Image (cartoon, rainbow over all chains, first blue to last red; front, top):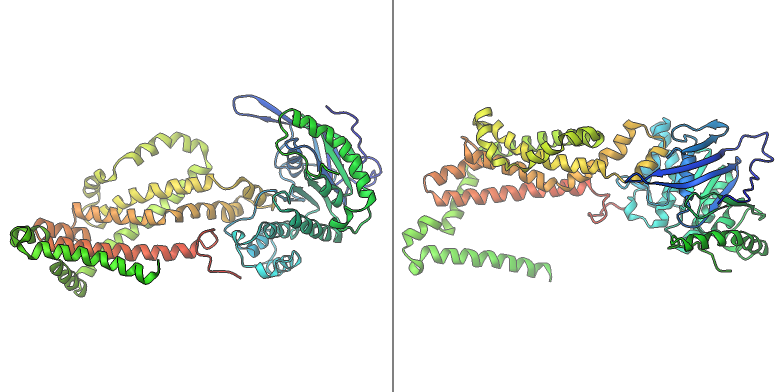
Length: 289
Length: 263
């Protein structure tokens, strides 16, 4: 399964500790009835501070599992997770996590959802008020401060979740197909918003997606995972596109098509493998072109 | 159907019902007037008696007793239900060990406990509170238990990633979730608190609405029974509309609830 694993993250950043370093990660789930399912096997991945890395792969290949290991939401059965050189035990306190599903507290308004993120940090009430209002403004929700999540659209809820995560100013951002449930246009708008917010103070960012075009348009590096079970990393590409980028326009550039063709060549094999195993209910998007 | 028409039809149902009742009990079409009146009283009598009671002071004292018992049963039952609901939901061993006993206790028709409670707590308000408690407790307990257990794993993981400690998780995630489930059963639990109070009074007491109805029954005062039932119905509707008000206030964030608070 693990063939030609390249690791560019290791080289070149010797002076600086990687923000996230996964070394030889195995993750096995114990299912009901005693059977086991090995989701990922022998994963090595380093993400430098300030680097935007996307992880793509067929559905069910363990991308989210890997992200949860980096977040400390689950402990790998083998291998090491290091955050800025420190071995991770328990939750990753230096990371923010953006979930695919709705993760806002439905009983709190948009404002309270964002403000409550500052409570564990011991920020004073007045200060938290000010910063929450400011952040809701930055994600373009100034007029929706007092709305409850169910009164907001899917895109607006994602904006609240983004503000909730970023207000804590985490050093590492982890995103699990955050724009998956949104429609195509909203995804583009959210992608540009994310790039805009990220580029102000570039944090290390791991972005899991099954949309290859989205991955290329957003990131510095695209990591391709093999089909599960026992998924590994099959390839690792640098994206040679200049920043700042506009997600809608960058797709028209020649360089974009070239890198897309390259990555798709290795991704397609895995997608077909997953499909052949009957896992291919929902294939990687952007398969055309 | 517009509102005026609907109310018109609703009033019509009442008028027809009262008219039939009136005809049956004040004409000799269906037998001897004295007999039918003994069994069914007459609408005019019942309304007159109700009016007389509602304008007198005595009934309010009895209503006050019933209300006190209802409120006490509700408050104590809810508090205990919330406490044990949380304890069981956060402690799997406790829940597993007590599971059959809780199920057995809940399966028992609570009315059979009324005489025991009368024996233990006397004929005052506390035997009624105890009966109401056994009814309210299980409703609240099961709902809070469910509410804590069924917190969305994503919401919980997100809150933990935001750095919340156990106390903050309780305050911002578990507690609101449990309360939602509890409030969704508010009508039922308040209703059961009242049932406990009235049934308790009915079976043995010296005050309250249940006592008034029982007293009228024991002297074959059918007018008194019907008027007591009418007052009880008005009382229940009043309490229920207060509960609706409270519920709408507390659950504004829920989809489908009145979403009057925007921006």
